[in-house]
Image (cartoon, rainbow, N blue to C red; front, side):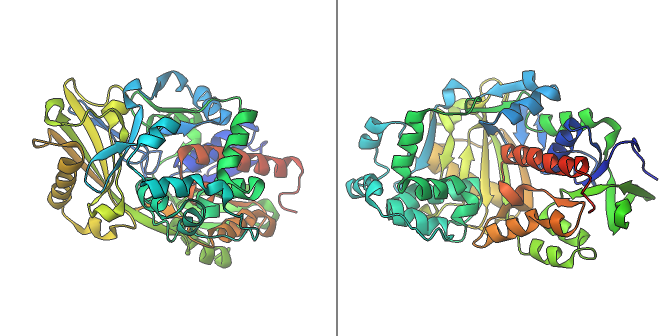
Length: 467
């Protein structure tokens, strides 16, 4: 029988990815005991870093764009604050592929916007007319595509937003919900009538955040963070532990039946927080909460293939003076986007070499994962020759496949999130977290974990968790 500090309330967190680790960390800050049950042999979920032949590859998240103090606090508390590496001065641009195959930097100011060839003159005028567009007062949800066309025009959608959504979310803006994917844009329109005016007003008022925005990773990759959190957990983190069933024990809480390397183990807990992907959470809840299980089954995921490549620097014509290049779907290539790791952070490639991560698949090409590794490399090389001028074979290749990489916030997702968020009001002591609830980024998972931990701890302190 698994038992931890019986004088403190105990929360069993099922899933040792960044969402589960985050809520567990913040629960400990509230003096609430936890046990993290992870079915694999390592923490982090899809977040994994791999070093070989002098190259450092990240399987999923490559970096973290942060403006929240809780992210810095967590990093400092688990001892990796000094391991951070920040965006290099060499990565000052972000490129977008034009229809002639030429990568062009996104404008970083009004003068660059006037000179850029990313928009036609008509497209620029339509974008600048955004403050004159009437607000949609209904507040109803709409797709990202509908919203961007309505406010900025077709060119901004096709040239900027579609490649960003395809590369960053592996999604289709014609299907994704604005409210769930980009809630800040919806809020700006509702509050200020215009996104442009709202952004200017907020800028003039100055940021109220006490944490400046910064982009960072770690010396040894993003896996550094989940590893450090699991070490901070100590023996509270239990790898190779697959949860078989969750049983309700009435006012005594929950009993979790699990297996660890063929050995059966039972855990008692006052509350349970399921931090597994939506499809796994649905299986765990099919008996005790079949309605919630059905809701979770409606959350879709996109497949992504990650083709990590290394080249001799003199075999790449492009200066690689940026984060990477986004690729619009209308260009007909296979790459969703390409990230220039060795420009972005130090210690990503051997001297004289460059490291480039390429993303394929998503909603644009879901069939990509059916291709062999050789086929994936071939289509990647064909695209890279056009985008950055590769003139020789790769020095290094590492390919990773994620059949269900990123959750898709389709229309109606907000209603799903609200119903799941209200779960503990209907089933006391049962909570859910995950990147399919409030944002796919590591930053979002950490922030949501903090808020959820506060609610769980408050339930214990109010002595009302189980009614």
